[in-house]
Length: 239
View (cartoon, rainbow, N blue to C red):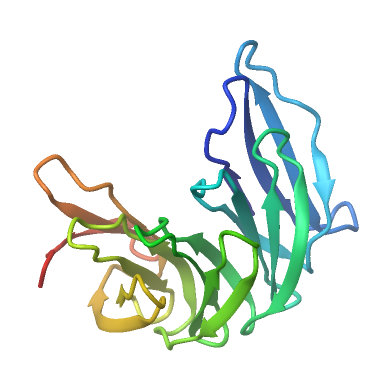
């Protein structure tokens, strides 16, 4: 259902992870591969246990201490699995499995803030919420902060880059509301302050933010399955 590349931590290898729903194999899990950057060969997978029906996987940015974390949203067990990843070997160390809302289906890590804060957001499809965690980047502890409301049947969550005035945004694509919910994220405590719902095309399946452009602009987009189009927004900064 999902694939994610780890940030580059080695001059010789690049790692990526794929979640596997076990309808054909009988076993749900996470497969981690490495790419040899000299030969472009892909390794055999190293497999890890997850919750039931893992639906999405995401890596954190590299912390100031060189740590990398990963999370898996487990749609079938209503949990999220968290791991610390060895930056050199790509080995996953299980941290813990946290209960969230019903049918979590998307997960995203924030950028690391200037005060060394890192947050994680998980959309809960049948709870119409997004669960927000604070990550202690020094000891790897994940703390559930709150689960604010979204639109109907959220499918995707994304964080913006951090803007020059230390603003951070998050957006959630809502499948049955045909809109995207936007939040201003407090970089000190991770609080999601609701900004508004913005109309998209029909059945938005995915949302993403652009990098900040050279002239200081920021954009967001949704991919709309029902209307077979995309919706593009310019984010008004400093408003």
